[in-house]
Length: 335
Image (tube, rainbow, N blue to C red; front, side, top):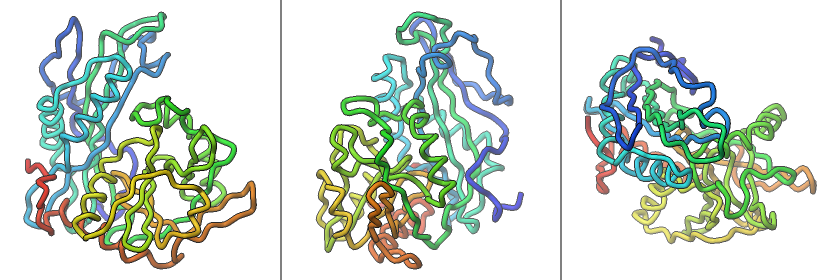
């Protein structure tokens, strides 16, 4: 395989790891060679969106070791989403074991260290019980798929241009926004597709209640740097990003002040750096945010060069993931 040509897309691998929940019990984990699954046409996942998912990565390090990055945090977040939907979820031990097995069963698809690529794991839960009534599914499939993915930016960060959403909401106040469930992503598909056709990398959403405060990007958390402060939104409709949580810790390690608070959209003019952060991209520096409705363009960075804080945070976090930097917080799990 030509690892240099990897993108962030589907590639058929060897096995997916599965377990079925029925009558109050999980079946033993099994490795299935076919990533097509057979479920009832009336499954709750198909009609009522009863499903939750996660995303994490495995890395082949500079020392040859294979590492999973913070899988216990993904297990906790999946349970949180499942609890919101009222469906069963695996415990941390079972979740981590399934992720490990997914890597081992597909080890030939784990990119080499030199490629700066990784293996993306997609754990998910879907309600499979046939139903037409509006209740939580009692039967659930838990599965973990593994796909090799390319680095979005390699060792270099490429600043992006974003669109500010004024006519579209991703999630309602006190709604599903802070849970990693499919409906949240479906709600942003059309707006995101239109934005990309217009040359924007993604959309920055405002709070749905007043549209005065920054919430998050389509599939990434928002962060900003002002002086020696790392600033990120405090909002009930923002997904608790594990990448953002890690960057907050690293910012504190760097001696920065962390501010988790409401961010008025007008404050975009005051930041030294702005970025989107998440599992897939780690960090995407943002150089411009365009508000088409008002004709305002917020310049939040250099078009050609990412800010120094973003570069340092990116290098530190990816250095930990690839075994180049000491893992002082014990975030990586070796396989």
